[in-house]
Amino acid sequence: MSGGEIAALIAAGAFLMLVLVLAVPILRLRHTVDATTRMIADLNDRTAPLLGDVNTTVKNVNTALEQVQTSLDGVNLQLAKVDTMTTHAQNVTANVANLAAVVSAAAANPLVKVAAFGYGVRKAAAARRHAETEREVRDTIKQQRRAARRGNG
Image (cartoon, rainbow, N blue to C red):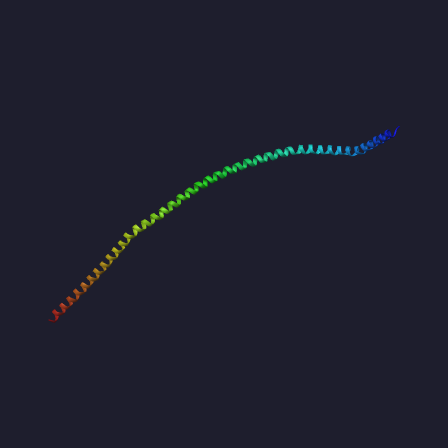
């Protein structure tokens, strides 16, 4: 046996030792990979129903959001109608206020005239009564003086 063959045998033995030393961690790593594979498969089995439930929940939430949007659209439509009614009511109120002012102005002038006329009539009636009373008093005094003159004369 020559020196090259001995070196080749030593190298082959070293390579065999290296393979044996590395075989133990590789076998342990295989068990770890197998356990990880089982865990991923188990996780996949458990996650699939959860994802289905999440998908169903998202669909339900989307449906609810669509219903809310429809409701909001209806509310906005009703608010627009209420806004229109409020504007009309405001216009009617302004018109009624203007009409009340016109009626008040139109009725106030004749009422003032009627009140003044009534005051004038009362004043004239009072003056006439006063004049009649004065005339009666004068007539009474004249009659008394005539009677007194007839009685003295």
